[in-house]
Image (cartoon, rainbow, N blue to C red):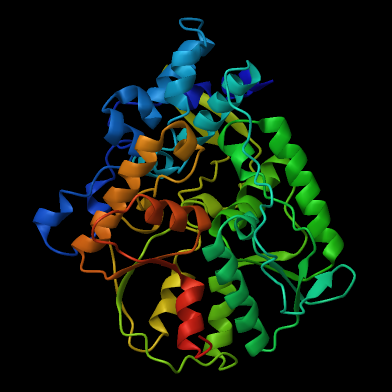
Length: 420
């Protein structure tokens, strides 16, 4: 099955012209913060390439390997699987490539991971299991759905079971919603999104988990789902539709949900937070959160080499992800100064925390995190703000010496609202 899926992407593989945009973000997209000298330090696009310095680890390199597999020139072995497992599946190579052509690099990489896993060379998904941490909602007396009814379902993510910081942020978001008099509730024994299975190519396991999660969410009968973690929004809005379907309720990230509450005065931010911060765009909240586009038509060839679609095929360029809401929320906080890093929005550099890489290639996770923190420091930021539990953990975990604090958008809103 996975080999057949790879075959459908053959023409995308053959479109590679070795331009290296999968390794180097398009230079016109680099933000000029700090002057030209600093810009040249932060132009790379691929964490495993930055660490290993071989083309094979890039989006283009993996497309070459996938094409060689289809043509029978190579086979899958442990060495090939080890190379592919270094990919954080961040999707930057995909949107960077689309700066000059319409090719689905990310689809090829995911299909390649699924084929490797199908042949038994992958790893088992590391599904998060609740640890002895206390229940994050203890003492809050929140509604539980579907036993109770509520307009909004707060989906906090698996991180609350094993990460004290994420659990604390979940409590803060619940208190903010209560302050704004939002009618909301939570799921008892909330299911894990399955993102780990998606990352390492466990297609069947991810599809089954997507079905379980979506059915649970639909059964809650809420009109809106507010996710705390960016990766959960990416799963619900972008990945689930390709493996099962999207939830029936409208899915919003916490920043998207909080912004109108602030703008309408239902949530007043009166306490100054005097910090200079920068915002790190999580991959699955940003470029990887676009819903899949539906297209029916025919791919044709002309002049012996050029291929085109009729009718024209719509392309996801990564530009319609959740980029503005977190920044707009930060700008409503009195006293806060927001500066931008050089690689932002759909061209943001990956934190290194995805794709199962922290377990399979901790050196890649470490080097990516340190490069991103260095970029934040280079633009003068005192604090690095993000909106994903994996980003926050990985950007914090590898730091030593001078520490740059990493916080969630919700944490700053909570402080500005005078709740903590």
